[in-house]
Image (cartoon, rainbow, N blue to C red):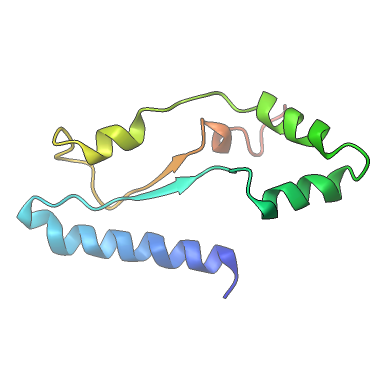
Length: 101
C-alpha cells in the first residue's frame, strides 16, 4: 500500500476513534511528523545531489521554521478539546508547500 494511502487510513481511523472515545473524555489525535534523517530521507538527498548530499540536507533544514510544543500539549491533561485531528509536527514546513520560497 502506498505511503499516502496509509496516511489517509491513519487519519480516518483517528477521526473515528475521536468520535468513539471523545464522549469518555479521551481525545484521539494523530501526529504527522516532518522529515527525520532516516536512511530513506538520506537516500533522497543523495539522489537529489549525488556529489554533495549534505548540501541538500542543509538547504532543506534552512527552510524549516522550528516549532516544538504541540506534542507535549496533546499528551498533557490540558488537552480536553482537540480531538480527531492529524497534526503536522514538522516545524511549520508543511505551510510552505506551494508557496514561493
